Amino acid sequence: MSTYIYAILPADRPLNLDGLQGVGKEPTALRTLSSDKLTAVVSEAPEDLRAKRRDVLAHQAVQERLLADGSVLPMRFGLVGPNDEAVLAELDAQADAYLQRLEAIGDCIEYNLKASRDESDLLREVVAESDLVRDLNERTRKNPQAQGDKVALGQAISQEVERLEKRDASTVINGLAPSAQQYAKADVPQAHFLNVSFLVPRASAAEFCDRVDEMAKRLEPVFQLSLRGPLPPYSFV
Image 1 (cartoon, rainbow, N blue to C red):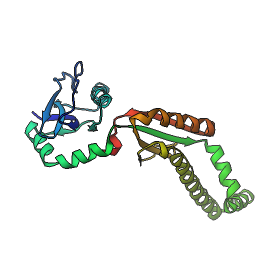
Image 2: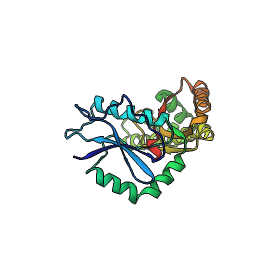
Image 3: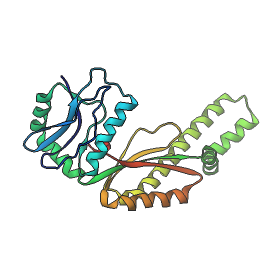
Image 4: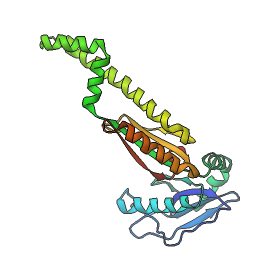
């Protein structure tokens, strides 16, 4: 049977998996596969594995328990090896690479931040800062049939919005990065201008969250910051 993989850890790290269940409608017990240097937390993989809420929550519960006890390389939901032997072979073959990542991550956790901005306020700033947008806006207002000017206006607004969103993203990141070890940008969801994860030393978590709160108070209500965490450091594995 194939093997579902939750995480990779140093072989000498104590584990407490009591009370946890694996993924699947009829989950099997969690267990470990250990090489000389590494341990993988695994279970049997169900044949009909899907990203159902039940299974995602079970996966997250294992990650959270492991994260609470120290550094861990979390695997994303749905990672399956052909069998135990293949997983052990991978642990042996890539031991140095996994250990390097564990050392780089250290005793850190991840926080994800998404940022959005009031659209009306953004457009007001675009008009205020761009002579070209103001000129084209005035020309299209006087001559609504001028299709060329309408197209040019749309392009000019789009370029200005992109410029301002990049500026705002840099402002947010630069304000928070000093409290983090690393950061990693991700695809930006609709209606947001920033989606970034920060790798934060566990000892600095309170300082980081305080810095986010202070920034949110300064920027609201024009900007909205949404923070999730602590999370396993998925973005840095």
